[in-house]
Image 1: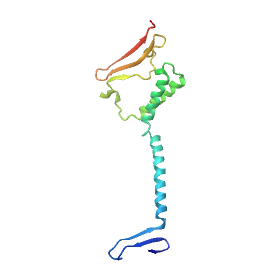
Image 2: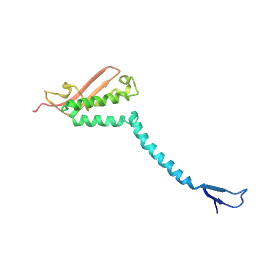
Image 3: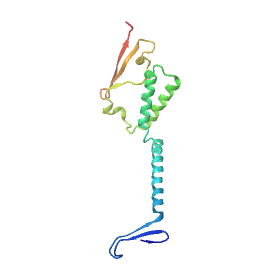
Image 4: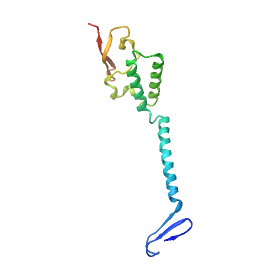
Length: 154
């Protein structure tokens, strides 16, 4: 093995025909710096994606569902919780890539209502709603309806 000031040189056999491998001493340090930089970029890219809204749809949906459960579909919400919920919906709506989402075929169907501002659907001042509230949507026929279970106290 021949050693120079900044290189390690290994000679396998004949110089003209065999493999000569040269590795600079600082190559390993450079490799470690590149690895560290890649890790830093990965960490910051996750944050950047989140800030750009590319990674927040699932987070926003999760927060909406949690707040809906916490407030019993909006029945026992505080004014602060209502403002928070409306803010979450506005953020989520901005991330919607389908600008004609109300006309989407995938919207038609039966949905579980997890939050609403409607006093009549929630039953405020009336018989308590128990169990799930389902909402049926028909975008083609322009119809909607609700299915609720009511406790009349019998």
